[in-house]
Image 1 (cartoon, one colour):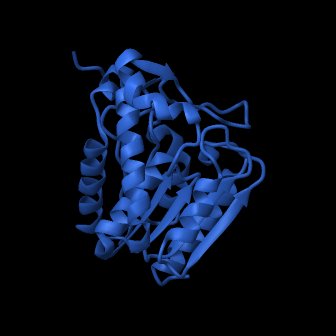
Image 2 (tube, helix red, strand yellow):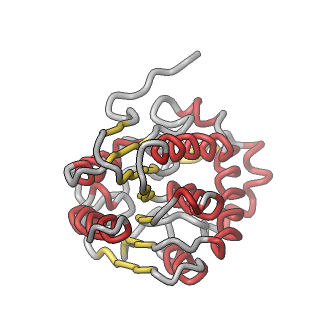
Image 3 (cartoon, one colour):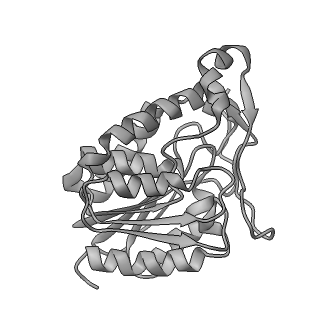
Amino acid sequence: MAYPVLSGAEAFAFPGGDVGVLLLHGFTGSPQGLRPWGEALRNDGHTILCPLLPGHGTHVKDLAGARAADWVAASEAALDDLTGHCRTVVICSLSFGSALALHLAATRPEQVAGLITVNAALYHKDRRLTLLPLLKFLVATAPGVGSDLADSAEKELAYEQIPLKTFASVLAFQRQVRAELPRVRQPLLCYVSRQDHVVDPGCTTYLASHVAAGDVQVVWLERSYHVATLDYDRQVIFDGSLAFIRRVAGRG
C-alpha cells in the first residue's frame, strides 16, 4: 500500500531570485527539520527547494524499500531543477543530507557554488555495526535516533525505527563519499554541535581536513544537539548561512 505524507513532512519550495538554495534533510528525518532554515533564506530573496527524499516522511515501511541510489537520484533531480532557474546554487544540509551534498559537489562541481553542512554524518563509531552484514538479515529494525534536541520545546518529525537493510546502504554510501572528498573544491561552511548524541562531531573535522577546498570554515555550536537547525543555535546557523551565500554569490 502507498502511505500518505505525514503532515509537516512535505517537500517545500519558495520562489525567489537567481540565487538558489537546495536543502537536504537527514536519514529518517524530513523537510520539517529544515523548514525554518529555508524560510530564513527565502526572506533574503533566494529561491529555495527542499525535496522529500524517497522513503521518508510517510511510514518506516517505505524507508525499508529505499536505498542510497534513490536519494542520490532525488537530490540530483532537485539540483537540476534549481540550476535550470538560478545562476548560482548553494547546498545546505543536515546530517546524512551532508553526505548527499558532498557527493553532488564532487560529481557535479559545475552546478554547486558552495556548501553548508550541519552535523555532517560521514561515518558511525558504534562497534556493533561490524555485525550489521549479518544482523540485517536477523533483525528488521533498530530504535530510531530522531529529535536529538537540547530545546525540549521543539520536536523533529522523524521515524522511531531504522530499517537495518536500508541503514547498510547508508554506511556503504558514506564510505563512497569519504573517498570522494578530495574532489570537493567549493567553499564550505560547517556547523558542528559540541554535544551530539547521533553523529560523532569528529565527522566534521574529518570532512574539513579531507576536502580539497581552500575556503573551509568550521563553526562549533555550544547549545545545540544533533538537529541544530531546530535547536537553540539555529539563528547562528541562519545568520551565518545568509552571509556565506551572499559572499559565494558575489553579493556579500
